[in-house]
Image (cartoon, one colour):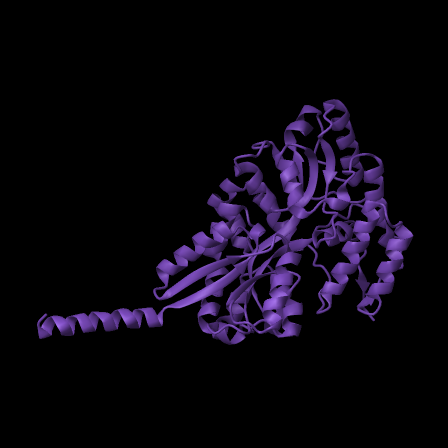
Length: 417
């Protein structure tokens, strides 16, 4: 080999080495229910636009609780293995208190207010803790009433406005269909995060809340209403007898199998029910506002997933850039079409392509904007454990209303002094 070829080979080797050295790999953690397949496609697009950056998608945990258990281990040890983490809307205050999230204010710079002003207010409130931007929203969510529109049409029933309407309609259809596998209504009842909303939605529907002026507010008749409602639904045969075992994704599975008339669940179910190969209800599902109590004060529980940069990441600046991309209107539209993930941008709800994929988004936006948040506190895990365990015990028949409510008051009093 002559000298020119040697120099050329050395130069090419140097360039290749420099390219390899300058490449950054960002690891993002997401849960299985948050459509990691869609995340992968979005990450592929980002890699095309950002030479030198590779995205590794790590998937773990079928539920918010399982995901957080894994993350507790990683973050408590200050492990730098993760750069970006998808966290539940209930988590930013907890992450801020624990020092697990890198505040994003410095990375947003002069654009901070402009960026925040694009989002629905509820998500700004959730992600800004003590004046600092702890995370940015990835997608919104809220609970809706899913129903079998083909069965309601068959029995000439409208989508129920009240819980009593739901009970009556479900009983009529169940009696008419004579199908032992057909259940009237399902909501989360297992000792999981979704069961917190099973308690809160009827409570809010009574015009009440867990706290009032910062103090615990469970010594009221309204605090008993969620137990009483679920008790009536169960006694009537409308609520599944094994509701104490029902987790979030089990509701979707049962709905797609054609075994549910009504379900209280989240936005992602629409896309799965219409597009999964094994769905028995394609074209047969309607989505409506959750029923109200007799007072007419309907409510829904806010959900959604946020993007946090790990405080222990070694690539914080690049991770923050990736988070800004993931939390953009462009990506919000991609998610809405591919996964029926609800946008955090009011403007995306009006997009023609988004509405073609999700016709029910036309009324979903205002519902999400008015959805209520679960208690915001660094001690939220205690709140969640208390509500879910007692609601599960009641639904499973191991506690009465008095015992369950009494335990909630005892355990939550130190949190809300």
